[in-house]
Image 1 (cartoon, helix red, strand yellow):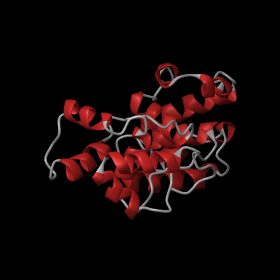
Image 2 (tube, rainbow, N blue to C red; image 1 turned 90 degrees about the vertical axis):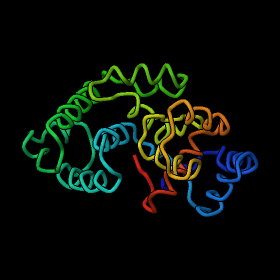
Image 3 (spheres, one colour; image 1 turned 180 degrees about the horizontal axis):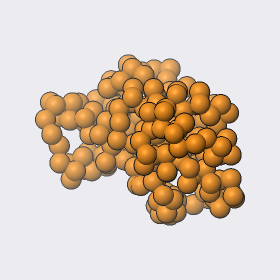
Image 4 (cartoon, rainbow, N blue to C red; image 1 turned 120 degrees about the vertical axis):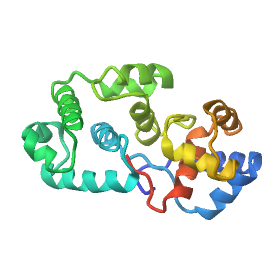
Amino acid sequence: MTGTTKPKYWLRATRELGAADPVMAGLITRYRGLTLASRGDAFQTLARSIVGQQISVKAAQSVWDRFVAEVGVMEPKRVLRKTVEQLRSCGLSGQKVNYLRDLSARFAEGAIDVSQWHSMDDEALIDELTEVKGIGRWTAEMFLIFYLTRPDVFPLADIGLQRAMELHYNRGRKLSERRITTLGRLWSPWRSVATWYLWRSLDPIPVEY
């Protein structure tokens, strides 16, 4: 994924992951030159995560592109100026429109204090984020990975992660959540990095939130 800020830990993480896991070593070599990078915009990252809920990366990109074209500059107040019908025309469900409008209102009114988030640990921040309408654990985890670039987030409910782990570690057969959790421990404290490489192995288009 291209972006604005490459995590300082990336080189160390790839070295340690490659040494601990031959499968991961192969993926790191295959996708050399690509890295996770924060876009540096909390509102956009959360909005993009909401758009991407329960749909494929390709579909999410298509809807996001139409959403951006409709709104213009991706700012909370500009989203709020659009009618429900205008937002629905971008391919958004009624539920996602409600979520995006609620998120936009919270940012516009100053009800969300992003400045506090950098000092909070992962679970505390996930708890706070999931108080916002439409933000569940998965969306919060995407935010931790793509905005804060936290190194050890492991989004168990992510379908792409599950599929990639089944492909690379179980010959395409289904893995239980318990087994996925156990395999993930091998990658700690760099599970965000491992997850990113597993996503890469499924889709040449970098995941972006």
